[in-house]
Length: 253
Image (cartoon, rainbow, N blue to C red; front, side, top):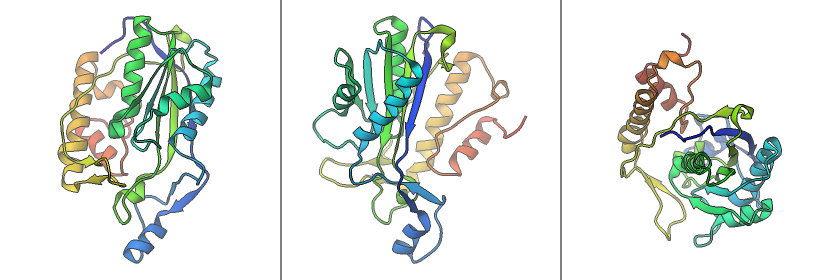
């Protein structure tokens, strides 16, 4: 998928809460000791949620971009504060935008990049001059679950615009590959998401990552050796390294 005109990232911003929870404390409480796969994780304060974090990240991105022509504000999250009420409209108003497209995206770890893809299409077609795509979540792992060690809180925002060579980076192409894989879900009245660990690696993470990367390389007529850097989704420390090796990327050429 390619836009008909140049679309780039004009600005980006991030927000990470101050509070930290050591993973050895999680292990001590639930399993009597040990250490998680990482040292600590960020957790939102009592007065923070996905909306407040999204606003902070977006403000930073907009300051960098210096863009006033914003026609879309999309928020990708699975931990929004309201079950029925869009977070994107709250964020848009806090940013001072009213004549905009606003929508919430729910797609587990893919919600933020899905928002980027849609805004790329809107900007590339000339429908809007620029847009803000935000990925944000709060920690919501079930107590004692493996997700508690890595599911943290934070936000990242990207301002996309048709501004040629002035972009921080240009979006040349993207692909999307989906299946209905039952590896991660939360029903309406449940407080915490569930996951089936036997599906988390195969067929969830590895199948979807490998399939989408192979399609992207084919579409762009490129090989792993053509790239200096490759960044993969990081639900834990092991998966991105393994999928890079499967696809033919190495740590040094």
